[in-house]
Length: 208
Picture (cartoon, rainbow, N blue to C red):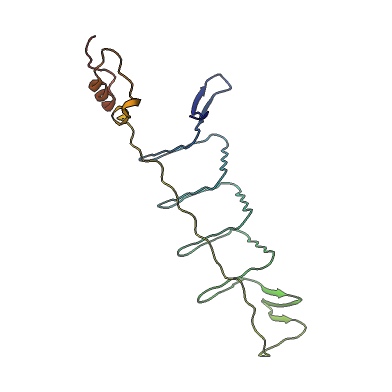
């Protein structure tokens, strides 16, 4: 109603083959077992508002080439137990203002050849030759205080809404009386309902 429409269009002309689906409002799917999708070329998805995904078991994903991700606002990640990251060559992290690492028990930084801490013209370097401290002054137990960082405050994701769980079939039984259509002349209504429930192509009817 209201000028909207749902559409299923099938184009079968050579070179222009297409299946087009338009849902004026909502689209709900319920798959009771597996779903498998293969795309022979590219896939493009556009979501105009928020996207919510809930996976109730494991997620496995393999990307054979580069992965390029851009987040144009904040990125929040919460991991309930451990996170393991392994890189084949290098990791390069740059922050405009601050990087804060915090641990409840210990932090270990380990390098096979060289480890350097550098700030404001002073640095500490650890390598095979020893420990090098360079700065305008080297202060040991000379008072002062340590710096502090901003704590992590990740935001949890929103809840996923379930798909419509309406049961298919028995449409004649569930239709409002004023919406029901009369069966074709000579067709037993109860026989028609029974055939629809059983998926039968033949009906037992009465002659006019």
